Amino acid sequence: MVFLANPNNPTGTWLDEHEIESLLQAIPADVIVVLDEAYHEYSAPLGIPDGTRWLARHPNLVVTRTFSKAYGLAGLRIGYALSHPDIGDLLNRVRQPFNVSVPGLAAAAAALDDREHLDATLALNRAGP
Image (cartoon, rainbow, N blue to C red; front, side):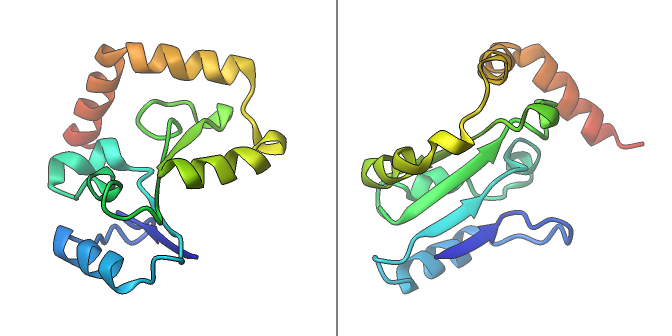
């Protein structure tokens, strides 16, 4: 299993589209690649590639994201993974002890519907201190 954070925390470095594509092509199909995109909402406007674009061509890829950063739900420990259905099936088999709470799921659903809050958070972040 290979884990990548893009962009990386705490360095802020990232892999570009060509580097990710090359890496995915070089890794054997039986090795799972987890691409952590915890900062996706902040990094997408900078041109950092969206890992979901490779899911269809690389069934060994798992893209993870979180509601902890831009959505402000860190205390609820809400995140999600996007993957090939076969990997999703395996993850579901071991998920039970790590499931999120009902209030956490409700908060995540509400956060997805609150685009105004997300836009304000991203604008505040771009404005800096």
